[in-house]
Length: 222
Ligand code: DC
Image 1 (cartoon, rainbow, N blue to C red):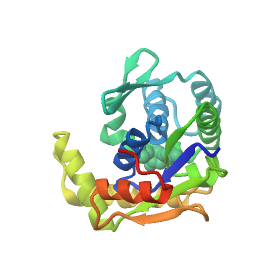
Image 2: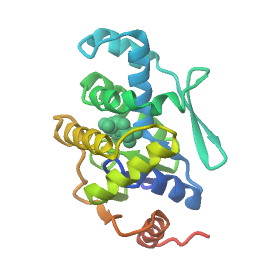
Image 3: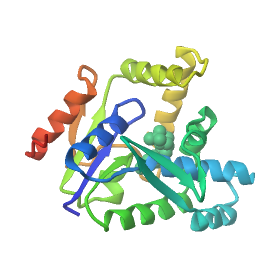
Image 4: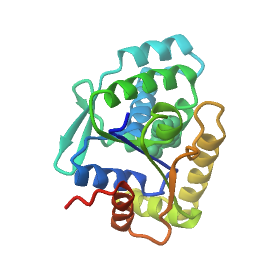
């Protein structure tokens, strides 16, 4: 698994932007595993399947056709033939994805899929459990974090950019609730791998974080 670089961290830590920029600099593909849990949440919501219906959830997971399509610097996410890139970022999916990601049946399906992708070649894999559970043998593991207020600011700005009208206080509440769920669940909780390098992004720009990681990797790529 030496070609897999894992980047884990909480919401608003900057991990998505950092992972995308890093993958670009290294010419590695980028895997957004949070998007996978979001697609599951969207599929369950649309099918009207509740979180206790394990058989139906298992069936949805086994049939799920998630496709990542690179487009310039971004990646479009498809569920079958439908572009769901925007739909999976809707506010109600934030919490539902977190709920769904605590389920064993969902985690095992996603973990298998992620390992399959990781076995195909180099990868920057971003999520919550990349270094701890999915790719425990990855040679390079990073955990990015930032102060609560900075994470709330980043998330608030992101949602404002999307044209949502939401208060900073509500963003703060949602973020704390999601942190609590993601960090305290029994399966694959969010935490740094023992051998991960921890980077505090509170006082850094995300470009500076990428430079820091490239220095750790010992490979300055222009
Ligand atoms: O990174 P994100 O906000 O798009 O992730 C959505 C949810 O998915 C998040 O609340 C927790 C879950 N998740 C997970 O449990 N494991 C991962 N590897 C990635 C995301």
